Amino acid sequence: MASRRKASAPVSSNGDATTQRREVPGALPHSSSEVAPSPGKQEPQQIARWDVLSEVSDAGKALATEVPLEDGVSFLRQRISFAHSRWTPQYPDLLYLQLDSFREFLQEDVPPQERRPVGLQQAFLSTFPVEDATGTYQLEFLYYWLEPPRYSEEECRERELTYAKTLKARFRLSSKVSPESEDYIEPIEQDVYLGNIPIMTDRGTFIINGSERVIVSQIHRSPGVFFDQVLHPSGLPIYSARIIPLRGAWLEFVIDVSEVMYVYIDRRKKFPVTTFLRALGYSHDHDIDDLFGLSLPIDPRKADQYVGRRIASEVVDLSTGEILAHRGEILSEELLERLQRAQITSFRIFAHKDPEQEPVLVKTLWKDITRNREEALELIYRQMRSSEAPDLETAVQLLERLFFTPKRYELDTVGRYRINTKLGLQVPLEVTHLTVEDVVATIRDLLEVAEGKRGIDDQDPLANRRVRT
Image (cartoon, rainbow, N blue to C red):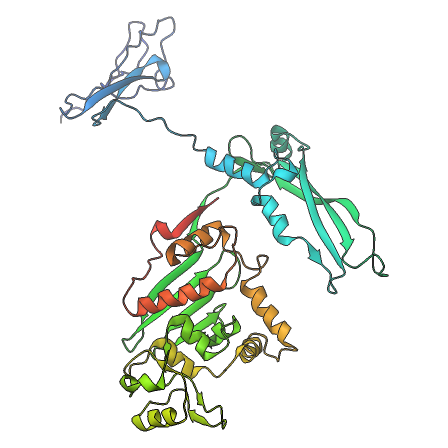
C-alpha cells in the first residue's frame, strides 16, 4: 500500500514554520494580522502595485489616479473619459435652493415695513385682522421678529434638543365703533410669544431633538385650470374642466353624455352651469345669451329667413299685455304674421339654425329651474347648507367666501399666471382668488374642447407640476 505523504510547511533557517505568502498582481494586500513576521527578522520592503488596464479603446482617454492604501501599498485607479472636450462645468451650489428659500420664508434681515407678502409674512397677512362675531373689535397684526437661539448647534446635538429660534409678534386690539359708543376701547398693543421655529443650518439641515434632518423637495400638481376627457361606459365622451386652487374649494365643470353642462362645487354638489352663472350676476336668460352669443335680436319685418328657428325670449304685446310667443317656440309663418300685425318692433331668435341640434348651453338652460339671481342663490345655499337661507345677503356671502375671498381661496402667483396664460386673461398676478372672468373664460374653453377646437391637458408631464420646498 502506498504510504501517504503528509504535506509539511516550509521551515526557516532557525527552525520556525512560516506561512508562504503569494503576491497576486492587482490584488489587495493581506492584512498585517495574517502574516506574523519572524522575531529578529526585518520585514521585506513593500512595493507599489499598479492596476492598469492592458488595452484602452481608441475612443477613450485614460485618466489614472494613484490611490494610497494601507500597509504602504497603492494602486492606480484608471478612469476613461469619452468626452470630446476637456472643459469641466462648474457645478452650482446645490444647497442654494434650500438656503435661499428658507431666508425668503423668514425675511429675518428685512425691516418689518419692507417685508414682501411671502412666507411667514404672508401667513400673518392672510389671517389677520380677525374680528369678533359682532364686528365690534378687531385684532391686527403689526410685525414679527425672531430672537437668537438659546443653544448652539453642537449643544443641541449633545442635549438632544431642537435648534430653533423664538417667534414673537406684536398685535393691536382695537374697536371699530365710534368713540362715543359704550363699546369703544383705546387701542392696545402687546407683544405675544407664538412659539419656536426650527432654524436651518448653513448645511441646509435642521436639528430636531438632537438629530440632523433634511428637507426633501416635493413635486405636486400645480394650481390652475385643467381640461380632460373620459369615456362613458356607453362609449360617449365626457368633457370636464377643473379649477384647482392651492387652498380652497375645487370648481369642476362637466359636459355629460346628454350634452348638458353642470358645475360641481367642492366635488360634492351639482348644479346646471347656468344656475351658477345667474348667481354670479348674469341673472336673466338674455344676459347668458349675450355672454356666449346664443341669440340675436331681429326685426319682425325682416324675419322671413328665420322661419323655422326657435324664439329665444318671450314676446309680449305691450298694448294688451298678451304673451304672443314663448321662449323655445318655433317661429312659423303664421306666428310671424301675428307678430307683424301686433307691430312688435324686435324680438330675439336663437343663433343655431337647426332646432334639433341645440348648443350645450341652450340644452342646459332647459334644465335650469331658476329664472333670476335670487332664485339661483337660494338654490345653491339650500343645496350647500341643507337649509333655507335666512336672507339674500347670507346666500351671497356663502358664494363670496367659497371662491372670491383671499383668506379662504388661494390660487398662488403660479396658479394665477397659469390661468392667465391658458385662458388668455390679463388679471393682475396679485389677484390670487377666483374672479367671474375666470369662470366665464373656463366655460368658453370647455365648449371649444367639446367642439374639437382645442385639445385636452395631460397632468403627468412636469410642465403641469411644480417643485415645492
